[in-house]
Image (cartoon, rainbow, N blue to C red):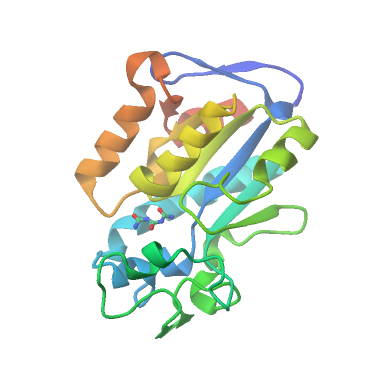
Length: 225
Ligand code: TIU
């Protein structure tokens, strides 16, 4: 594809003006801790199988994005092994029997360097793709994401990953306040709660696209051909 050529992607509330050389694919927190049993997601009481339907559409989009030679970035939610960046409020929230930093079947829950913290094999980063480790729900808080995007001339992002109403929504809102345009393909984001999947997407595109645009991956793929 010609990366400098702007093209329109069918989206809600209206078409998204896709500028390939200024647009990054940002894949949020597709980690074993959220998508596999025994991790942080299950610790919070969730059925992790709900999220797995987002894997195949992300694989197709990632493959096409890579083939087009466009920028890919990944994020991971997690904490330093000494938990110095873990707010006490986050550690005790939920009153769970097992907490962040405790031992689990995939290593210490939500701790960097542990097996559960890593990205699922289906979407594993390749050389040249930045991986942003974030301690919070939003990908901008306490990370170098904003600096990297500005240095690279990125002004828009296709945002995918999990979960729709938590880290995806928080990141899209943070990005919006910093002046980025975000497009969210509905089949590439997942929630443990079907009603939050629906509401999380509606909140983004409502009021004329108050936080961004919503589409589906087939429409993004069509723009990559
Ligand atoms: N609990 C939940 O829905 N999500 C998170 O804690 N993190 C992310 O969304 N990545």
